[in-house]
Length: 131
Length: 148
Image (cartoon, rainbow over all chains, first blue to last red; front, side):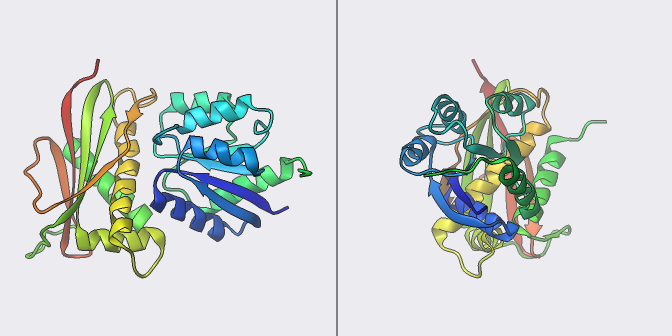
């Protein structure tokens, strides 16, 4: 199963780093899209199904926390796997986002092998999407 | 025995640049240091009190670091600025992890990016390291006051 992935980060450099790390992970992907904040991502997700959202936490306009809450509350997006990528290592934040259903929390910097292991886990448990 | 803030900043600089940008450090101060202009990234943290982290990187070195981070041979000035901002963001997470109350939710602002011709004398904890033999890079942490 090839994954369709959405990267959400306000830093254009970080979006490129994440894209490159996905490529280096060897994961089969059917497409990678990018948004620069949570609000953009929600608008994108209204139009396009993705299998995985990789999101930063601290972003302007709409934070990653808010994006995750809104995705969890929306039947259209609540089954999308979410991986948080952040420099913030506070245990309370990790626990809070995990309670909201986040699949994994990666702290920067991270390695392709870590992403590959997460994507494999998501692929093994994913339901088949019939568009 | 607790580690001094200056040493914590030095370790943070070294670790982040090695792991993220694959940059190597020269532990000895060289005879010639590359002076400005500098890309400066500034970021505010709330950790019971307000702290501002600032990262000064000579423009030429910022472009080298950007190439290391992105895995490319050439980078633009804009890439270099955003790279310095992202490196500071990573260092901010590392800094908070070493401070009291590290498990609690804190605020990490979005980095502000600028270019300056001179690096002001630090008014807080600071560390300067030499990268690839010549070029100085400075990380400083300045306590601004108690948060409400």
